[in-house]
Image (cartoon, rainbow, N blue to C red):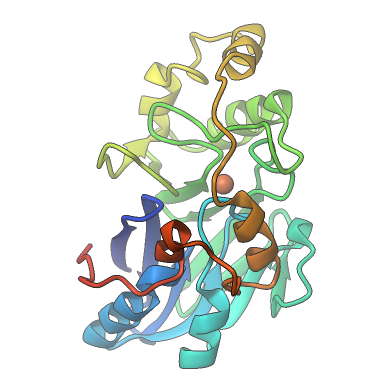
Length: 249
Ligand SMILES: [Fe+2]
């Protein structure tokens, strides 16, 4: 499998490229608006055709480039069925698979950060979105999030994967790139096996995080598979504007 982990610095999002060596078909998980041209450049350099974009959930901190990539590259937009977005070409249910050539990506419903959230499993890699981050997890106080539900998704669904499965999150704010199921089981300070259900609920209830500054634009934009609002203030335009210098990797 051809694999690239691509970084988008405005929202510290990782976009993942998976490609089939034989058929030269590819998909992107969680592509982001400011870096859609960079992503197409990487695909072109690798001689890959973009067949699908997959979003893990309706994001609140960035706008997906799924629709833009569909226009530019003819890719099909995949969303969790639970997101209930009319613009998706394919809505994946829990346990369903999306295939490109010899690569099969299995969809796992992992709600709790949001109620629509999915993770995607491809062989020895799991793309955990905002459900499970390296030494952390996504917040649970918006978009029908629920800490008790997230605990069950991570502990019962993700932690039941093979210990050596590589964990690739949607974000990292400290330039960490990858973990494993064994590492998160062992030392995740919120969800690791040393923490009880009650301790997790208490941690999440005491986070006191600020209101997400882009959520009121991102959620409606992402419900349309990636539409930038016309009325963005100057400080928010970077969420939609092309990166001046395309980050590599
Ligand atoms: Fe999120």
